[in-house]
Length: 321
Image (cartoon, rainbow, N blue to C red; front, side, top):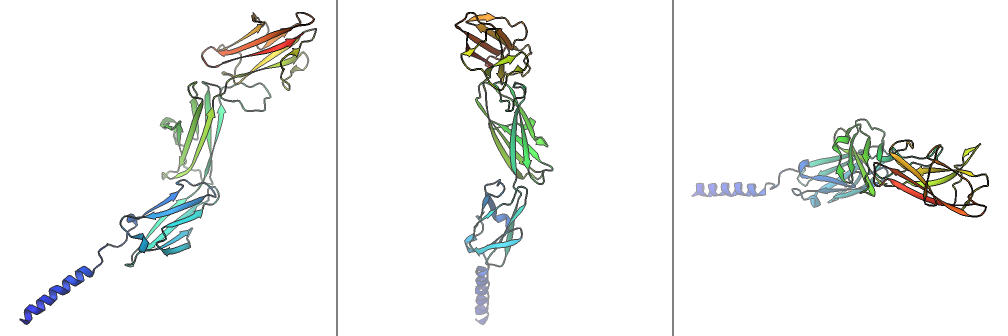
């Protein structure tokens, strides 16, 4: 009888200890995810960090947040944290320690090196007159070059991933490829260029976006002085007065492509009161003399790229005698 009671006591003891053992394994770092928003923060930007887990009850754990090794916030169930990044290229190491009630702990860490990416564009083949202080705009069906400038203290090993209108351009992407060429079309009034810059570890260090609009050519009339040359400082206005000895009028087709105006691809024609006028010296210039003492005439110029149906422009000006 005593042996039966002893055996029963032994079985009950084993069962008791079996049920009293922890039902969950020790906390593991892989069971916890650490995310930040935004995913690619810029310099001096507020970042929101969040812990999440399906395997660990984070509401019962002691959570300690730190940046660059300095503990800043601690609390039970402290699953969120916010901080501010440093200057461009300055690293911020976000760390978090999770202490479970069973004495186990886990650590998570993210290194952030914020950088800005400036995108600069250039119209590759767009005409502007000499000494023009502005920027040549992009004509329809013309080539464009976009350059990415990564503002980071450590840009070594940068990999550039380009997109045009949300379509990946893998042939133009890769290590050190900080520029991108593309050809605009008449169908797209605006093109969106994006670049994402990553390091050799695959971490994104910066992104950039740029919208580029099509520009129609613009024809402007100027007076040419026999001694001083073209008077670019003042465009001719409608009803310009022609002197008795005559005037030499010059036309400048801003933002036409190609920018070489003597190219055989460009056709420039003049009309006077609806009739074609020959320009024996240069197709940019027209000499005109008064037809009468009092009166007016209409001068019209048309510039077109014979290889492009949509790359053309025309302009009229009234002149008085």
